[in-house]
Image (cartoon, rainbow, N blue to C red; front, side):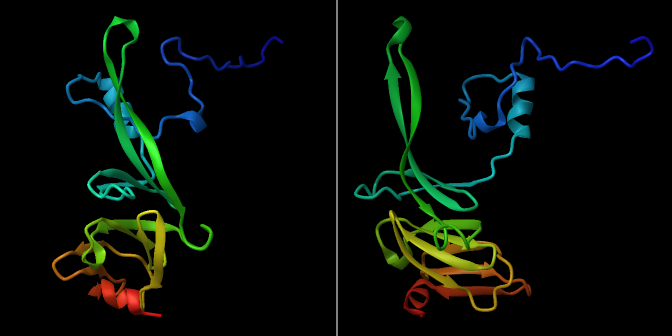
Length: 193
């Protein structure tokens, strides 16, 4: 009709196809040998990954192999990265496959535990890396690779703080909400009821 405002119809750019957010890549690994365009570099830096990543020796039955440890808010996933070669197209193309070794739901069936951060290390002076996840309420949950070891609430913890593992004394160090630094020996946490 005459006098009616024109309606804008959404059109997709011919150069940039629209992506379904549910199918968007979670992690993009870029080879430093390849140059990035400025637009692609901005797109990579603008994307946020809502997970914490660590590398450690957390593969069962292969303590020397490194794994990618991914902490999601309600889940812990341990993956390995395997190089593969493809001879398609006459040349050798190399790619990497991400293989899930195991995954854990956090807390009691993943319900009462929202992850804040994690550390890895040879807790209890073992030869392999164990994983310790701290929740939003200050609870620690320890995983011995593909098995859950224990879960302990830190005394007086209201909020989570920075968490690190000190191998020389086999202890976790954290900051509390009342601005104090506290240390908890691993063997004391294991023995606590």
